[in-house]
Amino acid sequence: MQESFPLAYSKQIHALGLMSGTSLDGLDIGYFSFVQDPDLNWHYEILQCATLPYSDFWEQSLRGASLLNAEELLELNTLYGRYLAQHVKEFVQKHSISKIDVVASHGHTVLHNPKKGYTLQIGDGRAIKLEFPNCQVVYDFRMQDVLLGGNGAPLVPIGDAHLFSNYQACLNLGGFSNISFQWNDVRTAFDISPVNTVLNHYASQLGHPYDKDGTLARTGNLDSELLARLDSLEFYTYPAPKSLGMEWVEKHIFPLLSTTDPHGALTTFTHHCAGVISRTLVQYDLHSVLVTGGGAYNSYLVELIKDYSGCNLFVPEAQLIEYKEALIFAFMGVLRMHNINNVLASATGAQRDHSTGLLL
Image (cartoon, rainbow, N blue to C red; front, side, top):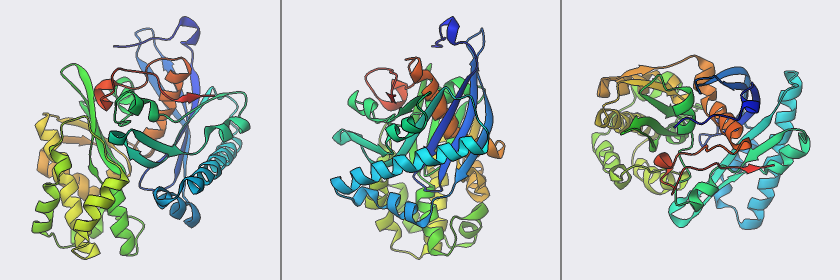
């Protein structure tokens, strides 16, 4: 169901979106504009965007954050909030941005276990508000959904439904793969499998930050027995909606892959990703699929998904590949500032659709 703004709000709205993914590539910052036409269709424009690679300190701090005690985690939450605020300030100054209605910050996910009733994204939004007192700030997008019985993920389907409805499905190949599509007249979405959280880990062991074009995976040895064990993991039998976190990867994926060498692990897991994703596309009869996220650059992975599924995969221009999540969190911030539902219960499993995010 489409929702419209009151007439006073059907003007162009400018928003900043901040996203830090589980693959730890860096902080994505985007500046976007949104407008809703008289037919209630949403339109967006990507105005400026940048990825700020994490220093060794920040990569190590965020990667190890789930192992910190409460006091250390609170300290990191404040420190990372100040980091976000400083980089947003520098981004705004660099691009001479003068019009900002809302800053939407996803933060960085440290803990995610909705079955136990919690999810945690660090990066205190109050630090951003102190730097930008004249615009609204939205952060902490996931916990309310968990309190409503949902998985707290995936959240991007609201943007997929409103901004990319010309595709049957939207597939994100980021730290994890997730998909969003219309099914029985409702938006369905769920996490499929880990992707770059695992691939980047083994590429780094081979001296590369990531597997460029899938070249390493293309030349490694496929371990068929290991592939079968990966494919038989219980998570893949769960019904949607469902979501994944790093804790699951550390408990179920890394122990299995530790039985082979890093090059073989990279090859085998790339085939595993492609197979699990392809089976999902075939199961739901999806043929027209928009592919974004860092994994869209992995030509070997995309090639395998095409071969296994027979689907038409559309890889867009670089800006959309890299900044779609920042775009959608900015869009969620726009909806939140006007108290319009920005989470779909059909995607997360929550009791109802709702408008989430702490608003400052």
